[in-house]
Image (cartoon, rainbow, N blue to C red):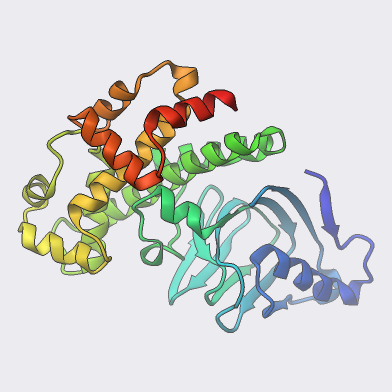
Length: 318
């Protein structure tokens, strides 16, 4: 990526002001504060590549601090920040985290946040429309924004390598390839986050949000099990079905709906790739836990207003 903004040719006392304007574009916020201990010595560079509705940004800068004071208006986007070098103190929704190289955090751009870089830093940032996260994962974003995910786990290392490869490949991706890659990437991020939270949360906890995250993680890792359902989840988590149903009711859904929605999303992704893999509709449906092809076809058409074979034909033409 070529740099789209650099302080190299800006008068020292104007650098921070110009950096603030550039940061407002990155974070989609018009109310940013930007500070540095020594404005005259501040240096920074931004690299930006946009492909359709996805933005990849790489930022290198010296010590500084940015924050938005109020809830920002405008398009809601998610920001995935990967710390490549240096450290960063992050705050959102009262959650204070410390990023070291290899760690990442997810932010919602239109809610209050602050980022503090005590020394030279480099970050890779992926900016995603909110619908990508809503459509492709069971992860409830409000529960996890602002939480630093350490880069020491195997799942986080996969996310890190995926991020690096995605940045390199982005300029060459087709629109369909881009959207498929983003879906896969969000799945990898969700897995990393859920695995981290599962490890951090005791087996029995009174915190409903964290209980829900544990159940969602079980759903995500057992979608291919045809016996996955409310009763099996209740047994696995040592609680009652009624209690689990109350947790999901608070999210505006049911356990069964959440499971079948996620299975349909997995099937959709596999059907798009069927021209390359050679897998049939029946094979894909059965793999993801549908015991009846007829039930799968009806559910798929109801959800996407498109039958499975039509999606394969459409993907073949592309």
